[in-house]
Length: 253
Ligand code: NAD
Image (cartoon, rainbow, N blue to C red; front, side, top):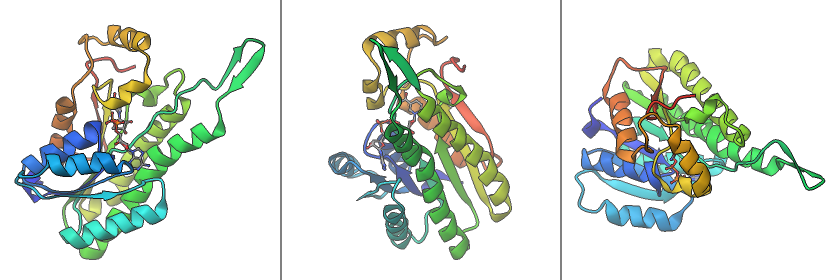
């Protein structure tokens, strides 16, 4: 698919990778419906996209809430005549060890933190893909792409059982939806970044970040524009489906 033919929905578009993807797509001439829970960030995105060749509309979206997803996809579909690309990018971290002995007490990972991460990182992409694909089938759109933003933490990472489980589950949906939907012209791909320089890194202490960077063969964190190259490839390459591309400086574990 040519980027300029994209009618793209990007979730988590107010910050980091989602913001970068939205602006890069609009620069290439694609129309983008950008959703996020962060209204201030969406407004900054709208202003930042002014004057670009592609149209950007912004609207509040909570991917973990079914009614919010249904309303968002409905409005984007009406404005664009049906989206043909979905980028499931919204994601959160709520790190913690499963159980940890601390001064005579055992601290447990609260179930609320488990649920929040699964709701946003796994249930969110399912709801978004379901609604977008339903519109694609209803409208008879012949060529379309879904991209799920995973993480190399999917393989398991101490302190991230909720996050790792959500991303491993997301990769399973990438493969499953690719198999289910290939005959309908829907390609489904994933990207598993390593550490990338976005505001999400605020959640990691300076000491731990230094240690993590020391373990990256290329010796630095990635840049959003380097992950964008993978997204561009997945959208443009009509023979790509069912796979997850790692963009991680060689640090896959
Ligand atoms: P970020 O925190 O900068 O951006 C995430 C965006 O998602 C924010 O704007 C946030 O408001 C939004 N969001 C959170 N909950 C939401 C919800 N319920 N509905 C809609 N939007 C919601 O983080 P980022 O680094 O840009 O992360 C983007 C994606 O990349 C995430 O899925 C993340 O897991 C993944 N990822 C990031 C890294 C990294 O190092 N930056 C590495 C691997 C994977």
